[in-house]
Image (cartoon, rainbow, N blue to C red; front, side, top):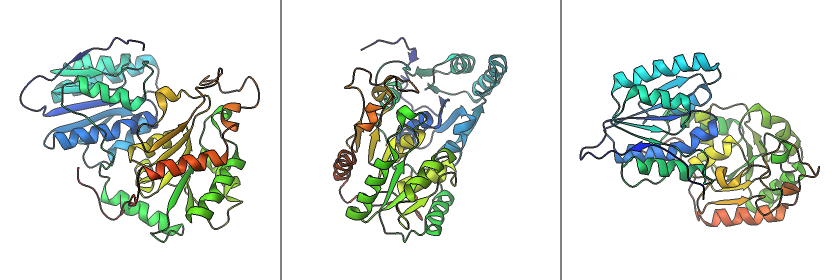
Length: 356
């Protein structure tokens, strides 16, 4: 395994850290992976302040979490000079707040500038390039900080307002509060990350026939086109919520669901964050760095192929064999496997919050 140079100073005091800052920029999925670990920190240190510094796109993911104290934002879409000025200002803010511990879960020049100006008593950095799952790398980073045993906590609380909004949205789209909900997520960014639509239709029909489930589409407007074509074959058995939820409401909807069949996307990571059983289809993506972890996840990836995990938006053979070879029968078998890991999994009562 490739070694990667990361810096850290562990928290070695007998008293718990009172003020902590986690930094994670980039995509929503990257930010979502941190949620169960930050929730674990909250349970371990209920009296400590936990702040987050993130990018604009992930801001709402953290802002409505009742156990995150403050959310600060860096506009990562700006040019290097403007971003440096922004990072300098955030570093001064962090120094004024006198953080005991900073978790740099980004580890780029922007986050390092913030941390160096802040001068925390202890800090840890993220391994960006080691071929390990993102969740594993987050966990390793937090362990190096010396805060004690870390494990993902998938039952972190959302705000009561968010859970009520999710419940109302589902009911407005015909949910009776009891029928099992299954998320299909045809959200792959490139054609080399997209499972054929006819296969989704076949899986959806089997879910309806065998499991008496309702099919749910979530995520951004980008999903809507594929969702409409899939649900045209399943009148009355689908609800298309794509483009209709905020990030926190999407988390609450996912928590009410039974399982997910998904391509590599931010919503996949959000599903993992709330503990949803997942069947993930990886074509050109790096499954060794991006796929969900745990017994309740089955990853159908391309790592066994010579051309697998190519990270290319186009297939040089023209057939995207890495994904088209995966049959609906194989996916249904995987779905049965992940659901068996969570026997009798109760759907979350959206009118109540867990306590963190």
